[in-house]
Amino acid sequence: EPEVTQTPSHQVTQMGQEVILRCVPISNHLYFYWYRQILGQKVEFLVSFYNNEISEKSEIFDDQFSVERPDGSNFTLKIRSTKLEDSAMYFCASTLSGTGELFFGEGSRLTVL
Amino acid sequence: AQRVTQPEKLLSVFKGAPVELKCNYSYSGSPELFWYVQYSRQRLQLLLRHISRESIKGFTADLNKGETSFHLKKPFAQEEDSAMYYCALLGGGTSYGKLTFGQGTILTVHP
Image (cartoon, rainbow over all chains, first blue to last red; front, top):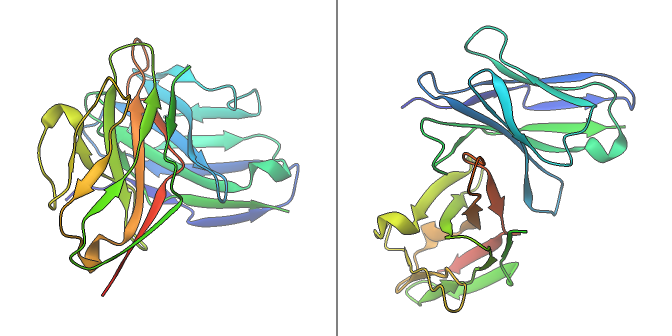
């Protein structure tokens, strides 16, 4: 069964460094998302991406964040200059029809020191 | 603003007992609600959605618009039901697939 895959599973970085989290969505899906979960808190929406552009972003998704789908298969989240509070589990998800039945990856745990 | 509340962080029951995981929502439009589940060491996955009105793994959930609730129920809990359960609300308009999650409830089913 096709799955969303994410790399790396865990990344440790120094504050101020750039981080790129990578995702390979399910191949025929059209809508792509990043969510994050700070330890002990709820899963929060960051951004949705459709038709090669951001369709919606949350107030968390400020200028430090960007997303790209560079080659038709990968979907990346870049954090330009990481802060301590960016430490979280980042989940990529995709869906065919934007109806709320999301398929999630296993997550990338980001630790900012 | 839309909001999802799961009042119980932890819920423990014994095998064979009924279980109810509570979810309340706040949303001005017509809500679409979901239950997602995360088993130990597995990814977050859809359990059920209110539109389909089906029973998955013995779980059901009924949307009660009067009480703005979408509680998840199972008459006889099994040990394999132990997991983290998230209630989620789908945003409308241009929010394709944007889900607002509750805090989650950790269900533990004891033998």
